Length: 348
Image (tube, one colour):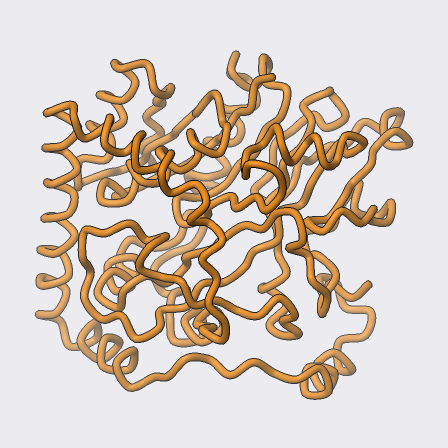
């Protein structure tokens, strides 16, 4: 069974090796990674990883009319690795697959859901928890405070990335789900949520949000470390998002993801295997040097940004802020009632 992870990155040299190590431990067999416009050595690190046979690297430098992610997705659709894969997942370097069943690997997940053709992996936001400085430590160890299993708002907290069987039912990749469904194959689709419940047929075509207000994490979740340390968040804002400019990062983005209500260390079940893969990567002198250079670049970039008043102001607001308060179901309904019938509410 071949499991393909597709990733796009820009200036993520400080985090890339941990992400790869975890997902090798998780059971992914192939990695197709696109880099664009890197200045921290991420592209050089990917070149070295490709030389070592760990992954396939494609340079995807801009400009791109639709953004680097969509350009990468179009290229990935035509790539031999995509055609050869049995299962495919497109996701980001701040997203970690966290499987709760069996031994925590992809084969164990499929053994628990043998009938599934697609499994939406719902985000679980991991908050900042007051971490100010960026340090070279695994994010899965530093950030262990998360949103509760029942998060009624924001609706973005129920978004997912889709692990899907590459059987031809969908003819194009998408950011959150496969696209361009083959109408003749939809009757055979079985979409199953992260707790093993069969989802209604409208998920086969166009949904990107799991049902709000229920636990979608019984068998698997997507740990989403969207914020990181405050210093690192500033650098992330400067970089911009894959399909938007840097201005889309602001305090609204921070507040809607900074949930620290419960401790969740479930991902640590793969820590020994992840640590072994990470040690093997860093045993290569070139990779170790590129990782250290990426860490140094990130620290230096933060100090450079702090010379600008706008970035200092954002940093100050981060320091002033507290973790987001979870809304009760009744409070969330005050919002939902104004969006009845609106696209993207996620109500089910």
